[in-house]
Image (cartoon, rainbow, N blue to C red; front, top):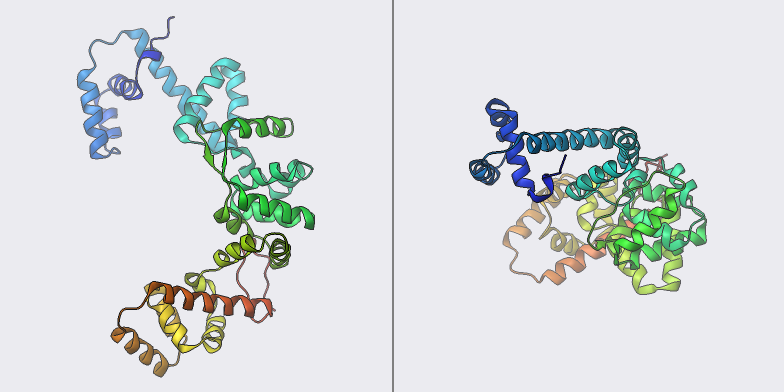
Length: 338
């Protein structure tokens, strides 16, 4: 049977499917659409002329295969879906279905690893080159990546953290090559078609927020020796002023006592209502009333001054944490207050 689907756009296929499903089912589906989607689909359906039965059958079959593949991905990831589809459809057709799906879903590389236990991931990658480990960790969930990073040897932790922080964009060919190497150990995954933003400061900050405090301190200390500017940039983003909301009341009261009143007032100038309310809650009634009055009558201030005040308060938080006088909740839940 000749394949007529290749000449059709995605919208045309959707219109044919809607026609094939009938008015009742199509009406129910269109209730989930946006106004623009309804307009587009109505236009495509109205432009659809005579559709031969072979084309209709092929479109329905493609939809069914895609729906089944999505269900398999939800159950066990792309690797699992590919294995099942290969048994049912053969290798070529299974690859077509997976490629169709992943281009639509924009599935991230190493998706199969995000469904694995951190210890399993560690076993897969611990003997790989630091750059390879950095690439994989930059695609994992922060908690997963933090747990894996914590379990690596100390020197390797620093190498990997630095590489994640300094990583920019990675070509699909490089990602595909790494995936092929790991395919021998775990299920294969797919890659996005365009260059993918990988790693960077934001990525390593997310990872370090998921590691234990000892690992974080060790990595930052070593980075300070190797690349002071990079270490400083990472530390600036590790805990920001708005993160005060994750501290308990006793910790916030300690931070208020250790901070200058002028810094607190300036810092609150751009703070969210949630942060302000939490700080007011942990002040005396007299202090809270005084701060509210100051904020109400405060004239224009430079954003730079506000940010510097917030940085000084964040530094106070980190000093108290280093001294063991307060605990910042970590992503892996290893911090225990005794």
